[in-house]
Structure formats: structure tokens, C-alpha cells
Length: 100
Image (cartoon, rainbow, N blue to C red; front, side):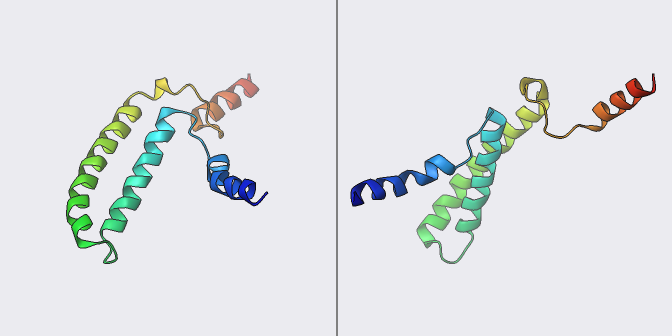
């Protein structure tokens, strides 16, 4: 019984962690993670060897992530999801339709 509880606790993060719905979500999450890694590497608590080597790798990862974000922003039509909140254009259309 104890072993079952231990296994359940080990997997709880997988169950409750929000999942990406689209590649753009994954890239944005990756960008946040790169920021967290970079922030850690800039702290005095990070080992000096990791700070030096890790900073160069984090910079490369940041560059790749930024390029992926730019690519996604250039092609918003590839994300078929509708936003949870209406945009200004949708509200204007609805108002015009109501006036007609």
C-alpha cells in the first residue's frame, strides 16, 4: 500500500501539469523555461563551472527559441484555435450585424 502511495506521488506532477494544446504553446513554455534556466545561471548559487558553460548553451537555446517564436508569430493562420476572448474585430462585426 505504501509503495502504491509513493508511486502516485511520483506521478502527480504528470497528471496535474497543464498540457500544451498546440506547438505554439510548447514553444512559449520552452521560452519560459529558458528564462528560468538563464536566471538560475546568473545567481551566485549556481556552480561556477556550470555558470560559464551553461550560459553559452542557454544563449544558443534562447536564440533558437526566439527564432521559433518569430516563425509562429509570422504564421498565425497555422493555429486553428479560437481565442477565449473576442478580439476587437469580432466585436465590431457583431455590433454592425446587430445594427442591420
